[in-house]
Length: 216
Image 1 (cartoon, rainbow, N blue to C red):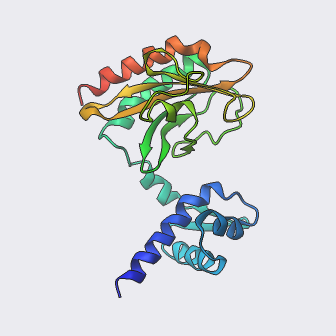
Image 2: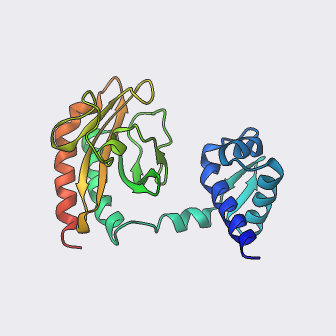
């Protein structure tokens, strides 16, 4: 009697996690592939999630509802982290023109807790809540063990010089959080303006953020 509800909840969360990655075309088929659930099950769960106000159906595709996105914005591993990082991220974006993100580990993945788009278009989903590949610079500085020699930099930093996507470069540094936890501060630019050239401002911003967090 108790196993089915857990199964339904698990399936619903699989669908919610996969929806941002499913695109707009053939969503149900794509969601079935991403979640490992049968297409009829995915379709049924989407209907139930819509009835609960968690997803919406508009313009011929499914999307996360605004209420769910608003709730996600309140999630943070340390109370006050988002507010403390906001001004630092904004200043770094203004100084470099790059897309700036504060990345935190989340279960078996990495998530941009905050992200500001830069002044140039990038081939990434530049928004808060976006998942980061485990091979990107922000994830490497949060992964136990040193990053590959070609990707590592002094003071625990790491680079992504078009290793994940053509035309995209990233530079990330660790940010110490109270209690021994860590986040990473990353900038992303096009290959025409390699992110590593902005290493100094990123490190200064990380130090400024750690100082802000020390008083939380």
